Amino acid sequence: MFDIFIETHFAGAHHLREYPGNCEKPHGHNWKVKVTVRASKLDELGMGIDFKILKQKVNAKVDELDHCDLNEHPAFLSQNPSSENIAIYLFDQLKSSLQHEHYQLYSISIRETESSGLTYYGPDVDA
Image (tube, rainbow, N blue to C red; front, side, top):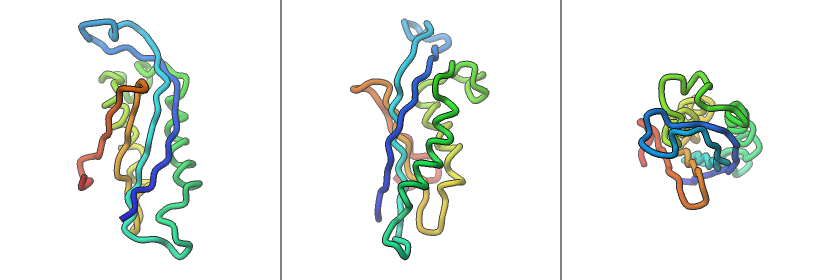
């Protein structure tokens, strides 16, 4: 098995509705995003997935979140744009395009700060 990943980032504003503290006020983060694909075998070139292809697919979705008020994004109109919900959103958006007989989307990691973050594996992935 190979866990192949790329890291990217986006800047965005949000606020957490009904949060009992400062995060209920509008504020921003420079989110770091790590996307990992798990490959069960390599292709004829010796790759699980080409980094270039992985970057293109991931950046197309992450760019939709960049420099936006996440509370106004259609995905977050009825749920808080927490790091957890951002990870679920990105996983759901990328899952079908990162599904192949040799690999599948494995996880999305989100970091709000240098010391705070999480990893989401999705409901169908064996972690």
